[in-house]
Amino acid sequence: MPELPEVEVVRRGLHEHVAGRTVASVEVLHPRAIRRHLPGAADFAHRLTGRTMVRARRRGKYLWVDLSDGDALLAHLGMSGQMLVQPVGVPDEKHLRVRVRFADDGPELRFVDQRTFGGLALAELVEVDGTALPQSVAHIARDPMDPAFDLAAAVAALRRRRTEVKRALLDQTLVSGVGNIYADEALWRSKLHGLRPTDKLTRPKAVELLGHATQVMHEALGEGGTSFDALYVNVNGQSGYFDRSLNVYGQENRPCRRCGTAVVREPFMNRSSYSCPRCQPRPRGL
DNA sequence: CCAGCTCCCTGGCTGC
DNA sequence: TGCAGCCAGGGAGCTG
Image 1 (tube, rainbow, N blue to C red):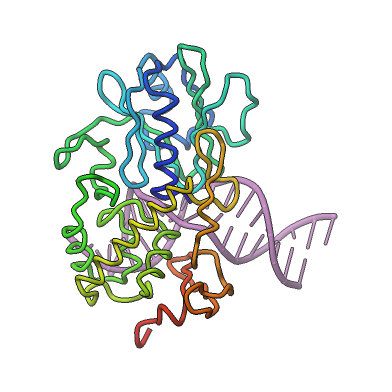
Image 2: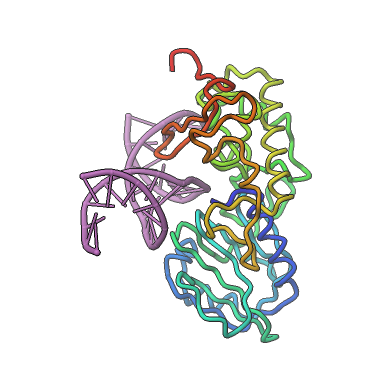
């Protein structure tokens, strides 16, 4: 369940541990992990070998490392993906999918992913709105931590949508980086039910909501991210602590920290939404 | 073009 | 104890 803060923790770790290092060999242990790299595993390994990693970047939940001579190593962690930096010789993780060794014989980069929703690919960079992005990230909106994030434009895009506000928050083409955890937390802070229609939100309320989403993700980043089980970890295998600060997500039947009413869990798009029924009343008729 | 649905996956947990 | 079924859920791709 890595969302923006967790991916940012990983990006920083990657930047610290792989920038400036040259790839010596690549081993793809599970083809599904590189399914987005259409030319296949052999091409992926061949083209990555010999390249130098320059700088780790991120947009929303997508992560990539710029490579020397152009192109980028693109990663999406999906639900359970991990980028680990491990000394050579450490026993393979059970769900190790891709291993990258470096010419300096230092710690290797490992992509580990239990549920295989994540993956790696080699991508060409294209310029979108003045920013170089992997082709497959071109449709992803800027996230609230992007220096060029345009709040007014994001608010307008959100209110233009004819859908429910939580669906809109999760739509990565409107604002990126927000997943189920931070959507629920931002809605709670804004005292909004996720089923509220987007086009009926006032402009100030939409500004408040995106402000809360930004705020909660900043706070989570300050705690090293959120973790429930050991699935989300930074490159050193450590978990963050933000789960202690969650107000509603995963808090079914616990008292709302604002009013004491029991937090409820409701089905939403084949998953769950958590909210306070008193602070965040359902819209009339739904 | 846009909203919304399905499907892809594994393993921990629950309940019978 | 065994096992079926549930649950976590991002996003590509498809449908209406």
